[in-house]
Each structure stands twice: as structure tokens, then as C-alpha cells.
Length: 322
Length: 254
Ligand SMILES: Nc1ncnc2c1ncn2[C@@H]1O[C@H](COP(=O)(O)OP(=O)(O)O)[C@@H](O)[C@H]1O
Ligand SMILES: [Mg+2]
Image (cartoon, rainbow over all chains, first blue to last red; front, side, top):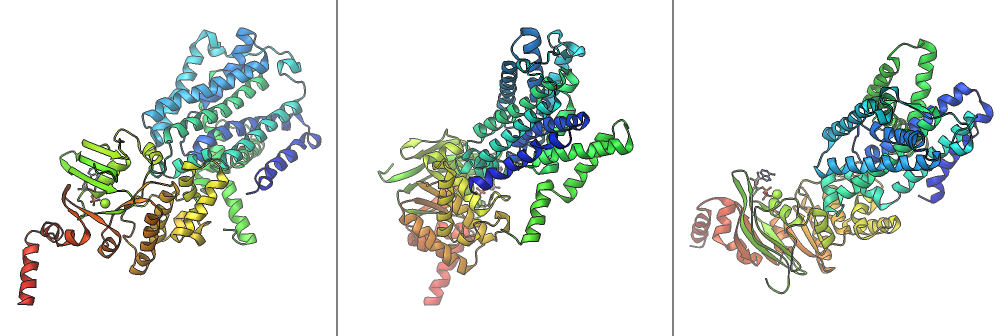
């Protein structure tokens, strides 16, 4: 694949989305878009490890929460500059990924065992953050409102939208370059058949460690951005199961192990969720019921997600490109 | 260990619970040659290969490769050292194209994607998968999957190639296609150890043969000698078979 064909569509999609605030600038819509992009980022992180590497995590909230709490606490407790806090929080999230990866992959955890261990870590973090005074306990953390570019706070929602979009596009470009690298080839090989990968000289432990570290860093970016946007978080938001679920649902629905899958999945999910809310009103739990239904439908009829359906449709229209 | 031995297995044993799958087996693979490992089903051939490639840790014994004890190395480090294996039960990366499958092997000594893909194309052509490059591995026939196993291993540029029944399940004309490929690999300087049941191929390819039965090496030598060895005939055909055959030949002659 030529670089143009590899990276061109990503930049095109980015440019198209970037023009949105010029046509539809309602705060409600921008707010929904920012939230969808935050989910997209978390999902892009999950997709590195789960989609490409086949290591399904049920606990990416652990990394999202590290990013969110890191950013918030460094500013509120230590007066660190917002941008520096953001960077440090991402480093913290990836360190958490490295640590959890080291512990679980070293002991050879795979499949549902790995999934459960990640879930357990996220839950432990949630319970600790909820109890510990340093993290604000059950009351959570409020970042002081101080709307200035220096504090990473903006009056216009469009600015947040563009920043979130920029991050999502940057991660798509990173994903594409991973796909085109030796690391990416090894990661996918591990997903497809770990023993065969080992026989071909793949150091599966180190590749998985790198993958979870990168994966955690990206999801931590999502959490850090979330905190910076809403200026408030508590344990149930930052380390809650909701984000673990959304982070894995979006790639499954959009297309596992693809560049566009997590983004299309996240945007699609939120579009559907908004429509349901408009039609059905605010029925408690309706989102989860809807997500559950969508998941069952996708798993039963479209294992390769929306991207898989699109690829198939294109092959049918234009003849198989093999 | 003789000077031209690239691999020597020294008194290797492997116990699975109450079963001694490999029992004090020793063998030597000479550099640049094709060594055959034959024996009835369940003899321990695959287990022995798994010990050489690092997938199974021996209960006892040493694995020497190029003069160094590699017994403590994990599988990927042995691949780096130059030991490649195929799996008797094929292990394709089913969701990937034939080309991407082979490229994983090629990446071992090539970090650039373009170089790995070029190597994959070259190896695919060598094993006769040249026109399947863009097909998913799951589309391949039995013979295609065996070739893919061979291609991936070969793409790692091994010094020693362990082939576990790559001809099994192939029809005679497919066997005739693959045998020259194995010859070509050897001629390119790769030492080969092969487990094989297709005797015609074993006889035409192997210079040295070891016979494993119930975990023990019961015979070793040139193909002609080994197949005439009464112990070997009995291992394959059952107790007393050698005597019966000799008697029958006697009767036919007499
Ligand atoms: N992982 C294992 N656990 C228990 N028994 C095994 C295992 N692998 C092989 N065996 C047993 O060891 C013996 C040798 O098997 P194997 O090496 O596959 O023989 P071969 O390749 O010569 O047919 C068989 O009896 C087999 O059932
Ligand atoms: Mg076997």
C-alpha cells in the first residue's frame, strides 16, 4: 500500500469532521461529538491490544482513570501546569499498562483469565479512588474553572472538539504506521496463533508488553482529556465499568483490528444512543440494553463489524480485489 | 560430538505423567545434510522436535546447537539462533493472507516491512504458493497449508529446519512436487531433520536415518541399512514380523 493510500483517507476523514463546527455549531451537538471522540480515543487504545493483539481487556477503565485522576490531581493538589499534568498522566497510564501487562503476561494469562484480571485491577482502582482522601474520596475531584489557553480551558466547545479530533486523527495515523511495521505484524501474529508466532522467533511476551503500554497510553489520553473537558470526575466515572465497556464495544461494532473501526464504532454508537434517547426519552438503563442488543446482532451477523460489512459491500460492487 | 554436527541431542528424555514419551534419545544432525527421523505413531518424534525447538522442556538430557547448550532458551530465542520448525498439525495465521503469514517469518531478520514482503514473495514462489499470495491462509488446501508451514519456517533464514510430516496428507503428485523443494533448500545450505512416513521420500531425501520406537532410538544409519534392520521391521509391523518376512522370502526363493 502506498503512503498516500495508507494515510490519505485518515486525513480526509479528519478534514471532513473538522469542518463540522462551521455547519452545525449547537452546543448540544458539539458536546455529543466531543464525548463520542473521547470514547473513540479510549476505544482506539483498547483496539491496539484487543483488536490487533487479540488480548481482550475488560478493564481499560484502569488506564482511563489513571489519565483522568493524574491530570486532575496534579493540577489541584500540586499546582502543576495543565499541559504538563496531561503529559504526566499519560505516562502514569502507560506505566499502569506496563505493570498490569508484566504481571499478567509473565504468568501466561490469556483469554478470559486475562480479561478478568484487567477487570479486577480496574475495580480495585475504583474502590481505592472512592475511599482515599487524596483522590477526593466519593466526592471526586473538581478542577478549578479558569478559562485560559494556559490552563487548557476554553470557552468555545468547538476548540475542545478540534483538539479531541486532532488526537483521534493522530492516533489513527499511529495505528496505520503500526499496521505497516514489524511490531504490528508480530502483534497480529500473536492474535492469530501464539505458538506459531513463537516458532517464527516472535518474543511474544515483549510484544504484548509493548502493545499494552501503547494501548494504555492512548486510553489514558482519553481519560486525561475527559477530565480537562468536564473539569470534574469521581471514581465511578474515571474507573467505572462504563468506559471499559464502551472502549471494547466500539471496536467490536466498528471493526476489530482496523484503523477506522473504533472511531466509526464510537461515533455510530453515540449516534444510535442519542436517537434512542430522543425517541424513548431518558429510560434508565436503555443505553445498556441497546448496546447489548447491538453487540449480539453484530456478533451473530457481522463478525468483522461495520468495516467488515463495508469491505464486503465494496467487493460485491466493484468485484473482488482479492 | 563430531566436528560437522550442527545439532546433537544428548540423552534426552521427556516424561508426561506416567508415560515416558522420549526415553534417553540421542541423535546428531550433520551440517548440510538431510537427516530422517522415522518411527511408528506415538513413538515420540513430535515430542523430540518440540524439545529441540524449545516448546517442551526435556525431563533430562541436553540439546546442543552449534556447540552451545540451547536447552534453557525459550522457542523464540532458538529461532533467532537459527532453529526453525514446522508443525505436524498445521498452525496457520488463519485470518492473514498467505503473504502476511510468510512475512511474519521473514521479519525475524528484516525489520523493514518492504523487505519482509519481498522475502515472502520470494519464498512463496520457491514452495509453489506464488499465485496464492493474496488469498487468506484459511482458503488453502491441506497441501497448501503444508507448503505454508514450510514457507514461513524458511523465511526465517534458518540454519536448521525441522520438518514434521510436511508430506503427510499430500497425494503422490504433490509429494513429487515438494521433494525437489526440500532438495533445493538443502542445496542452499540449510540442514534439515525431517519426520516422515512417506518412505519413498525418506529413502530419496535422507542421508542419515534414526528410528524411534516407544521413545527410544532403536536404529540409526544409512537408509538401506536401517530399513533392513530386523528391530525396525518389528517396530513397524509387530513382534515376530522380521522372522516371518525372512521365512516368506526364503520360501519364495526356495
Ligand atoms: N502434551 C502431552 N501430554 C501428554 N502426553 C503427550 C503429550 N504430547 C505427546 N504425548 C504422548 O507422547 C507420546 C508421543 O507422542 P508424539 O511425540 O506426538 O509421537 P509421534 O510424533 O512419534 O507420533 C504419545 O503417546 C502421545 O500421546
Ligand atoms: Mg508426530
